[in-house]
Length: 369
Image (cartoon, rainbow, N blue to C red; front, side, top):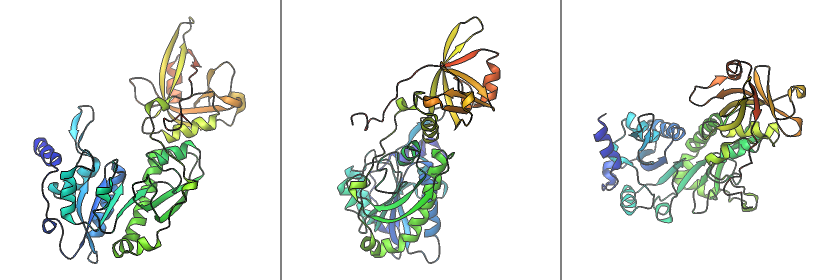
C-alpha cells in the first residue's frame, strides 16, 4: 500500500459518516475499540461472527490509536488493529484514530453511525461521558483480571508480579470510574509458575473473546444489563502502569519475588541487572544485563556469599535474600541478541561476576502509600 495514501486515510477523523454507508439496515451496528496485537485477535473474532448467515450485527466502525513510529526505520505505521482491519478489507474511512476519544469531530462521526453497542479491548484511551452516552446498549470492555481485582493499566503484569496462582478475565460494562462497571461474565484460570505476561495476556483475551461472542445476543437485547452484577468496591485492588525505572532487579529481595517480576515484565519493559565483571588482573567493568528467563534455585549450596554470581545447571545463580538463589537461564548483553546463560558464562573466559546493589523502585501509584 502507498504509504502517503495510508497516512491520509488514517489521519482523517473529521469525515461525516452516515449510517446507510456503514451498516445494512437489517444488522445492528457495533463499534470496536482496540489498538495492540492482542486486540486484533478480538476484532478478528468479531469479523468472523458477523459474517455468519445468522448474525444479527455488523462491525460498523473501528476506533484505534493514531499511527506511531515503529521498527528500526521509525516509519509511521498504523496500529496492529488498524492494519488487521485493512488486511481484512475493512473500509479505511471507517477506521478512526482520534488523539482523544472526546474530540468533537470524532464524536460527531460516531454519533452518525448510531451504534447499538461499543466493545473495547486494550484501546488505551479514556472514554468520556459524551462517548459513553452514544451507544444505545452501552459500552463493554474485556478486562484481563477478575474484577474488582487489578483495576488499571497493567492487570496481567501486576498479577504475575504478585505471584498469583489464579487470575481470569472479566466482561464488564464501562462507566466513568476506572474498570468499575457491572460485570456481565467472567472466567477464572490457573496460573502456571513459568508463564510470562505476553503469553498470559494472549490466553486471557482469547477467553475474554469467547465470553464476548457468547454474550452478544444478551448485550443487544438488553438482557445483559439486567443480569450484570455490580462490583464490590471494597475488594478492589489497583494495577498501576509500569514504568521503565521498575525494570531493575533488586537482589535484596527473595528469589521468588524476582522470578515473578521477570515473568511479569517480559516483553516490555523487561528486567535488568547491573553486574560487575572482574577481570583476571582485578580490573572491573559494570555491565547492564537484560534478564530474560529465570527460575528459583532449588539448590541452596549453589548460593554464595558476598554477592558473587556463580554458574550451575546451565544457569547464572544470583544470590538473593534469605539464602535464596535466582537461576538466570537466558540473558541479553548490551548490543547483542538473547543468549543462553551458558554461552554468556563461557564468553567471560574465567572472569568473575558480582552483583551491583540496586534500590527497589515502587510503582508510581504505590510509592506514596
